[in-house]
Image 1 (cartoon, rainbow, N blue to C red):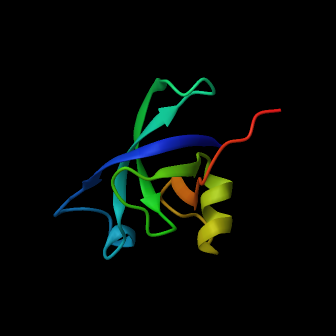
Image 2 (tube, helix red, strand yellow):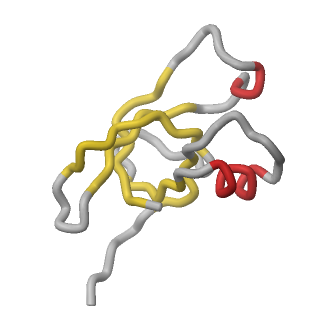
Image 3 (cartoon, rainbow, N blue to C red):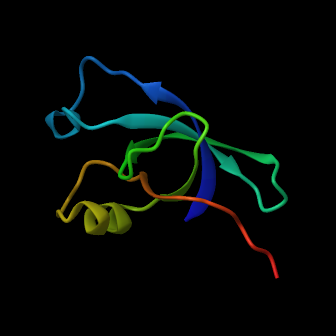
Length: 89
């Protein structure tokens, strides 16, 4: 998992039937020191996130299957939470 910022919605008029009616968002990784990382990817929105939100992203098929409650989901990146703050010890 990693923390990311939502950059923009992704609109695709032609897509796999699974994604019909599901929101896709472009997210960019935020590193531990608060800088942006190199990873930018498209994530399936599981928490009604919006542009500018900081979110928790899971990136593996098993996590996506578990969050959505289904087997063999065609997505491998999903937003699983809103990040209010990061507390470092």
